[in-house]
Each structure stands twice: as C-alpha cells, then as structure tokens.
Amino acid sequence: MSADQDPKESVKGFLQKARGRVSEGDVAAGAGVDVGTARSTLYQLMLAYDCALEAHEDGTLVYDFGARLVPLNRPTWGARLRKVARWLWKGFSVVYKASLAVVLVLYAVTFVVLIITAAIAASAASKDDRPATGAFHLVAAIFRAIFEFATY
Image (cartoon, rainbow, N blue to C red):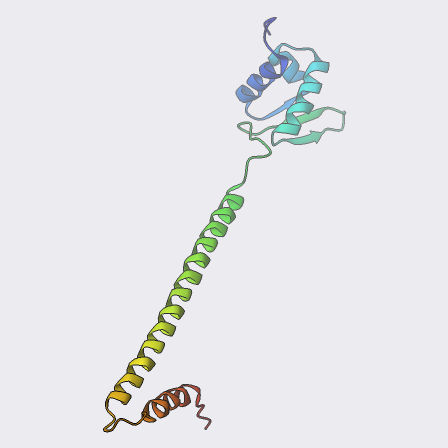
C-alpha cells in the first residue's frame, strides 16, 4: 500500500481482484495493511456491501463478498418490479377513473338533452294552444322504463 492510499480503497481493490472468499490474513497480505486495519476495514465493508461471514473451528473468519461488491441498499429486481407495477397500477387507476367520470357525465348530459328534446317535440306536436301534458307523460314514461324492474 502506498503512503497516500486509503486502507479502505486498497482493501476494496484487493476484494475486487480476489473475487471470492478471503480471510483477514489474506486481505492484510494482499492489500498491504496490518491485520487490525484489515479486520476493521472488512467490518466497515460488511456494513456497506453484501457479504457472507463464515467462522472456522480454529477461529478464522472467512469473508465472502462474492464476485463483485454489491451495495446493501441497492434494490433487488423484485423490488424494482413491484415499484414499476405500483406505478402502472396508479396510472391505470387514474385513466380508468377519469374515463368512467367522462362516460357518466356524457351519459347524464345526453339523457337530459334527450328528455328536453322529447318534451319540446311533444309540446310542438300538440294540436291546440293548451299546455302539453304529453311531455310530462313522456318524461314519466322514460323514468318508469329506466327504474322498472322485471322480476321473473
């Protein structure tokens, strides 16, 4: 290890070259640091990167950081997929609710326009100048047809 290089960086460099299981002695020799520095640096790296720790019967600790250093806070593919699925569901819900609201408003407006048109047509079709009662009966018949339930 050179005098200006951080021990953590030299240990990380060694772990990236080693690509597998290493002991504290391996790290100390490979990174050029003393065993105490290797131990504390490995502990710090265990807190930041995915690592499996194994204790042998003779007390030797073996660290396995895998083929490459993977940060612990990195989201998994499953977490990423769930995030995308939530985003898609929210988008679908907004589009669905908006389209339902538009359809309901258009239906209500169309229904009111049809009733008004039918009432005007019924009053225009009356033969005399008396108020047209046919318009009221027409509107009542439309509502009766809508709310009439056929039970068989």
